[in-house]
Picture 1 (cartoon, rainbow over the protein chains, first blue to last red):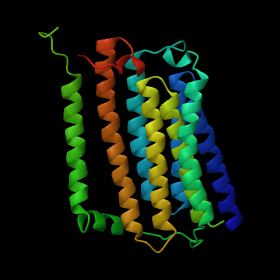
Picture 2 (picture 1 turned 90 degrees about the vertical axis):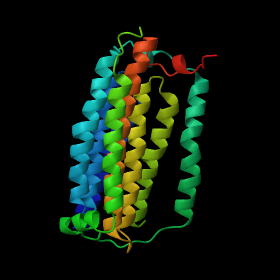
Picture 3 (picture 1 turned 120 degrees about the vertical axis):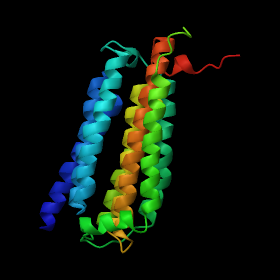
Picture 4 (picture 1 turned 120 degrees about the horizontal axis):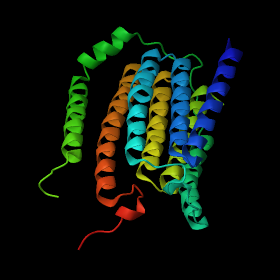
Length: 169
Length: 102
């Protein structure tokens, strides 16, 4: 069974890596979005592997179902073709800055992680959905209510920002 | 290497690639895609830390659910901002909106 888990982990890791590189490197934004969706599926698989099926399903529902569609609509509204702004040549200086942005956390956090190895159990904790629901309605009610308020405010704010005022233009 | 460390390294990879893309991308939507990568790395790290250690697994999983809610709210707002920027500047390039008026 352990071998199977390792194989599944390697498979999901491959999906995540390919998707992430595609999401960052693709010249066409739609391709980048497909890469992002690939990564989201890989991360959902890792949640399944960690015995967190509710989080995995929510990942598929919220990210793949809602956020990806939202980004696709944004791409559609902006109407960037394959020869859009992303396809222009970028200067090596910009690559240097971006690489520094990649290297800083990789060196600091990765170095810390490798220097202080974390030990953990091999078998993930299993939590039933009932327990999660009780947590949401018990100790973490305030966070639950606040996130719904945040979502409501974000949606109302989005409508307010994007609403076109005719008389002012 | 323990499983927890492997998961944390994957989350770190997502963080690093996301940061790289955030600087590398020119358009606002490309940057939004990279922010989603960053948030996914955060969620993965949180669930791994909660599931594979004696820490409270409920807290970790609910925290990740809250991150997803925040990501959805953030994507909604960014979509609205992108619409406004495109309407006003006819482009979604981040360079075009980097100058203040005044």
